[in-house]
Amino acid sequence: MGMAGEDDVSEYLQQNREAAAWVETVRGECESDKLWRHRREFILRNMRDFCGDELPPPPEANDKGLDRLLAYSMVWANHVFSGCRYPQPVMDRVLKMAENIKVTDAPVRTTRDELVSKVKKRGIASSNERVDYEPSKKVKSTDGTSRHSEADYQQSSHATTENTLHNEAQRTDAGSCEPVAQEWKSNSYSRPATKAQKQGNTGKGTRRLTSEDVKCRQSFFNRLYKRVAWKLVSSGGFSPNLNHTEVLSSSVESLSSTLDIAFVPLKDLADLPQNKTTQENIVCELRCQGVYLGMGCGKTKENAKAVASREAIKVFLKKKVVVKICKRKYCGQDVEDLALLDEESRCPNLPPAVKNPLEII
Image (tube, rainbow, N blue to C red):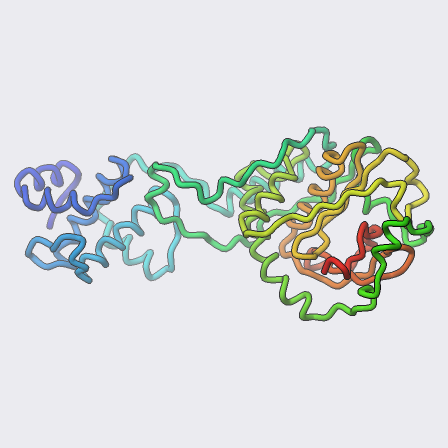
């Protein structure tokens, strides 16, 4: 079918009523007029190559040629209007099939790499600002919620996020919210364990962690890394005003897991560092799948959770996250724990554990 543009398509359909009626049967239920207008032209231009000279069968006939044509039309429409990418041989094929179609109103897109680059710069520029917001309550993730729109109809492909986001370490001024990990020194003194901590120090502490403990959790955090990266991109990047708690918790929930949150008064924490004497402060420790993510200190539980979430999110700004076996203090004794770290860092001097790690793992 030789056509020079949309006017020729309209003229062809006016002259071929059967073809006009047939092509409407393959239109998507939620497909917008703009998208359908161009995809319809794609189908009509390539119909003869896949279905021969006769009018194609209805969609429910499961004709292989027609199914391939419709699939190619969706690949092309997704690429033009949503920016989706497919394997190079498929891209070459559909672009050749659409080489005579002129799309003048396609949206201007920013590629994933360009967007991530902008987010990185924005995050670095604001990395030294202080967190001063009060986190909102947990909001249920809206990922996967159905919307009757053009975006619903398009089959977007999920590209692997690599070299996603990078940020410099952020230091918070002394005040109501402070990262606990920065304040612990290797020579911090030991306090007697509290009653609750003594009760938790059971025989399970003698268990040794193995590479299997790491291996069975690493795949989950590889997926979580991608979810957090895209959450940050869609939120405008890492910044002090970002709701870090929401980003982390919704990303975890999207993988059908839960974020484990533990609070303890700072004064009751064994191995309290010498410069931490504020009686009213609260310590929050975040874990997921038994793996330590981060710890924070604040005047309230919400403040402490916000700081802990921010510290956890920082790990996801690196090129890759890995689960490692590290040494921590618990009730004055060294214990093993699983911690989420970036690929290049060695096990840091982690703050004392709120609970016995080996009982949690």
